[in-house]
Image (tube, rainbow, N blue to C red; front, top):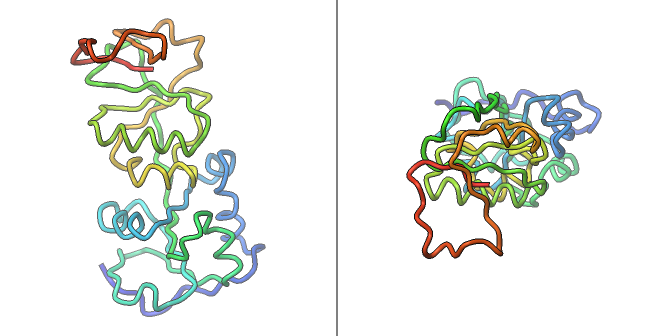
Length: 210
């Protein structure tokens, strides 16, 4: 770990090659194309740097004093951005330094094999809802989250904000379309407001929950 003696460069223009990539990371297409994501938050950023330093490649700031005294991983590039450019990337309006991370490769789930522990099958299209789900999943010790084709990108800025770094603690895998779910091994259950009362339901030790 080290402290940066200087910034690699000052970036002011949104037409800068780096800036153009960062600006594209606010939707699923840009995330898939560039395989990068943005992380914000006064708690999330220091926590991620401390626990997953190798996952990040850049730190974006507007004021050098904001990271004074920070112990930064070797190889982490530090960029000082103009205020307008930074604000266009700071979707949550935190005003706190942002991290640029590399999206991990999500393997395709083999649903023909039986579940191991509690597995969630999810197709939530709203990234904020998906992030909230992943935060709960991490808290309850879910073994893996299988993201169907219709699901939002798990590293979308809104999903990252709602997930509070849960993405880093979960095993995330890509699932098929709904038409292929019939071939998946069970037991499989779905949550439904008109279904059986959960208070009296005996959950199997290993299951898939939609």
